[in-house]
Structures are given as structure tokens and as C-alpha cells.
Length: 465
Image (cartoon, rainbow, N blue to C red; front, top):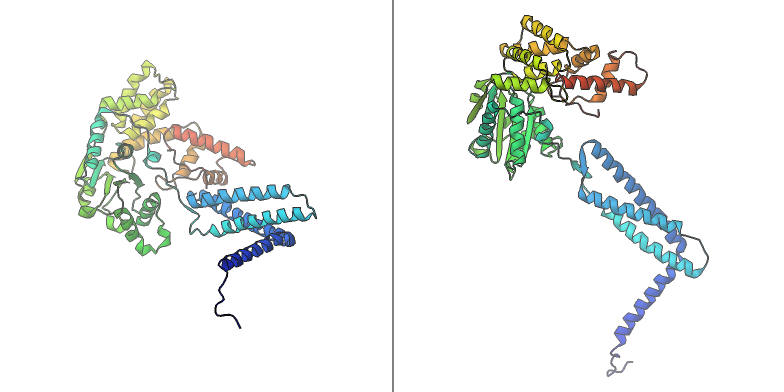
């Protein structure tokens, strides 16, 4: 029976708690020695698990990069930390010299236990929903082509830039016959607006005839970093409209070479009074397209004036040192007349003639003047076809002609995979019986460069498949 007047010693509770902690601490410290082999085994397991996770993440990142995606910042940080932990683990194992000494086993057991906590904690931190996100595709600069600042184009460029910058024209049209340089001018407009920060983003879309709405949606979405494949096709236009409508800064979408009226709502492009921060520039051959799509301002692009046309020809026909022989300048004027002031015809013809001797210039001019009319070709493109035909027919390299025809089976502005063309060229026998793939590849690249130099092919080939 306890005394009713008995009271606890004032420090008894504190001493009891302190004693308990000392006992727990002692047990923990003793376990480092007693269970050294267990700690060692668990350390190896945790290290192997981290190493496997690191390899998995690294492979996912490499796969993402091949899909033109960039790893997220959190994943990069996790990967770097995992790499450091793995390297430290290797150094720890390399410095081991097993001993039965109790003190050595105690120190190593304690060290391993702490390492296991670090490794386990880092493994648990990997809970990312997405390893990588689509990389931002090259902007309008990817489409940029040589632009010569002619007087007859300066005013058109200025009108287009001002119309889109003032905020009052959300739908602008650029109309002109085929070959007048609409694409080049529209590209320059987009480049200038993007570089001036007037628009946060400029998206350039090459249209097909008839238009492929799904492809247009996909092209726009990819440049906005949007994953349409994660939703049903029926919701693609809604998702794209929502994404564009919530852009805080101005967005310009250039639709190049529009042949018929487009329903922008079907695509997912906001327009009209509710265009938000989205502006559209269309290029087309037909004025009626600008009218049907209710362009608030339409700029008409005409052929080059004689002086500008001659300067363009001389620029592309000059030798590598920029020099053109005097006797050729008079012939250049005659060629320019046959091109009808169309930039595409002038550039193609001048690039071909640049490497020809004077005697052949005169012969080429005679051939051009006597060339027959083309059937089933738009009247405004006849001069373009005549010049392109002369360039093609007079190519010295038969392989280049065949490769050009092979490339013509692809859609307009298609980024042709160079490895695919190599395989097609070998299969079609263009390069003969080729045993060595590297030899075939070098031949294709040489022929491709020849076509690019003559402007019959643009630099739109992709390096990978």
C-alpha cells in the first residue's frame, strides 16, 4: 500500500525518457555491428534498384529526344542526383577492405545504413507523370528563304506588317499569281513580326489542295506543344480552339497557298470578333478566296518591275565571287523578259545558267523562245514551267534528273527523309548496283546538293527517317 503523501521525484520523468533514448541509441549503434551483413545485402539491393531505375529513365529520355521531345526539369534533376549517388556507391565499394574488426564492421554498417536511406528516398521521389515534353519546333526561321529587299516589295512588306501589328486586322490576305513570291514575302513578314516581339509565336502552315484539315490541326498543335492524340478526333478542334483562345500574347498563323475557302472553326482557329489574340495571314492566287474568308485587308502582289527582275537574275547568275561578265548582262535582260517578272522562274533559270559557258547561254535563250506551250497548266504558270523545264532538260547529271522525279512524288513542302530517298534511289537503280551503303549515301547527297543549287529542290530534307 502506497503512502497517500508520496510524490514523484521531480526529474524522474525526464530521466526515464533520457534512459529510454540512450537504450534505443545503444541498440541502434550495436545493430550496425551485429547486422553488418544484412546492411550490406540491403545496400546492394537498393543500389541495384537505383541503377536499374537510372538506366530506365535514361533510355526513356533518349527515346523522347528521338521523338523531338525534351526531358522535364524535374526528371533531369532526378537523373543527375541518381548519377551522383551511383558514382558515390561505386567509390564506397572500391574502398572496402573487409575486416572482422568489430570497430570496422560498426563504422561500415553505420555508413551503409545511412546510404540506404538516401537511395531509398531518391527512388521514392521518382513519381513523374511525364518524362519529357515536346520540344519547341523551329519557328518561322525554319521556313525563311533568301529575301532580296527590292523597292517593289518594300511597300508590300510594310503594308502587311502594319496591318497585322495595329491589332485591327485579325484576317489579312496576300494575293498574287503563282510564282510572284507570296511565300517568300509571307515568311519575311512572319520573321519580322517574331523578331520584333510583336507576336509571341508565328506558325507557318503549307496548305495542300484539297486541304487536309487533320494535318493542319496536327501541324498547329505540335508547334504549340499540344497533344491532340490524347483525345478523340471529334474533340481536336475544340481542344485546339481552347488552347489558342487562352494564349496571353499575340499568335500569328500563316496559311500558305490557300486554294479554297477554309472553315477556321473546323480547324480550331478562333476568328471574327472572338479571335482573342489569334491573327491569320493567308496567301492565295485567287482574290475570291480573300473575299470568301472575309479578309479585312488584302494586299495584291504583282510581278517584279523590270529593274528588280534584272537585279534578281544577276544576283543568282553571278559566279561565286559575285562577278558576272559584261557580255552576259545583255543576255540577262532577254532572259528576264522571257520569265515575265516571276521570281520563281527568274531564280531557277539564273541558278542553272550560272555554271554554263557564254555560248550555251545563247543557245538556251533560243530554246526558251521556241519552247512549246504546256497542256493542262494554268495560264499564269506557263512561263514558270518553261523556265523550270529548261533547267531540268539541260541538267548534265542524269542521276540528278531521276532523283528530281523521285522527289516529285512527295507532297508539297514535305520534309523528305534523306535515308528514305537513299533507299528508294538504290531500289530504283538510280545509282546502279551499290554494294556499299556509305558510297550510295555520298552519291545521293552530292546529287541532292546539285538540285538545291539549281533551286529545283529546296532544303527541306530531314536527316533522319
